[in-house]
Amino acid sequence: MTNPITPTDRVFLRHFSMVIGCLVLVMIGLILFAMHLYAHHPPPQNPAERQEVEARIAPVGAVYAGDTGRAALLAAQEAAKKAAEAQVAYGGTLDGKTIFGNLCQTCHTNAATGAPLITDKAAWAPRVAQGLDTLLKHAIEGYQGSKGLMPAKGGNPSLTDAQVKATVEWMLAQVK
Image 1 (spheres, rainbow, N blue to C red):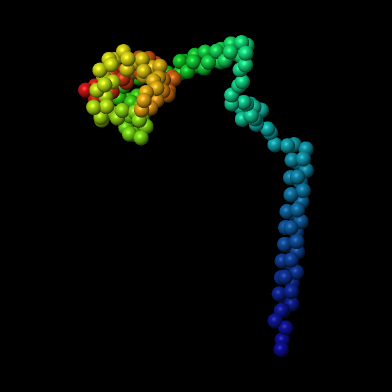
Image 2: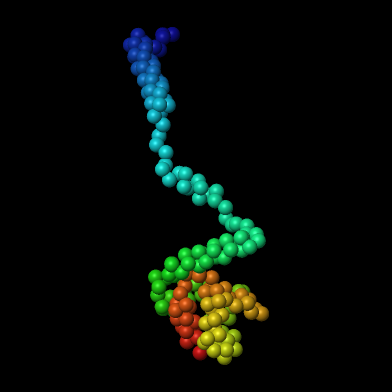
């Protein structure tokens, strides 16, 4: 039986092994060079990283005690109210249908919430009888009824009183 590896194959395998060995050495050299570079020159840090960390670990609430705490609580509530008033909801639109579609329909189209359905004229009759002023007061300031809760301004403090009025008037036009 003859040897299947010829002298030409041996030369090829020797040269191929040397090329592979050289490529492995070049790879190891590049890895070591990169490690050396990044050891002395770390990648740049995010300049907003500190603010992001502080925002993540900031307390969610606060404790107010005594007269000093009560004053601080009132100041915080006033600041939150002013911040909410500074932002006008839905681009300041006075289209009641738009506001209803974006905010009010969640409760007023779902019987499970206890809110009177926009399609149920019988449920609205006693409310309509109270008059527009009472309905506006309940919509703006909020109302706790026997069947549920109407949050102030539908739960969106950035609504203006004019926007609430436009929405209430639109809703009344739908139930009359």
